[in-house]
Image (cartoon, rainbow, N blue to C red; front, side, top):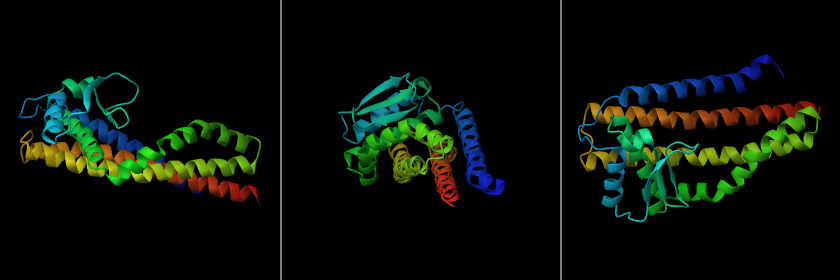
Length: 227
């Protein structure tokens, strides 16, 4: 396989992913330093948004684990890192509201979220075996293992594809809730929340593109080995 194809399928998505991460870092740094006019913390806003939506069975926790800010639908927990939990910045409110958006999706039986929840166990298993499958397939030149690797990547791609509407919809709900309840003001605060959430969403797009590049690279490598 030529160097050009490798750079196109692997290098370009990697560069795009790095740019996406930089935009997230930049947005969080910028708007994490600007206090919201409501002067409420991320956890306070999250509690108010959940209560306003009639959601009373979701707990809000300060999270110190390996994952970042997230909503756990199985445990009905909204987990915020210390910065977002205690922070009173525009970024903190945007992130907290985004996770509330996922809780609202769960309450409303949002189809893409339900689908993502169903395939999580399979994707976790695929992620665990994928490195061994790929290394073994290329090291021992076993097309069967490479085929299994392609199947694993295809499953992960399906998960990432379903994740995109889940994340974009949660961000849309977040901005609407924050404005509706008066926690952010039209103008610079809305623009700040939008910048933070758009940058975060871009990382999911980058992950999808990277996975697609890896999947195509494996498929082309397998076809080359079979010649």
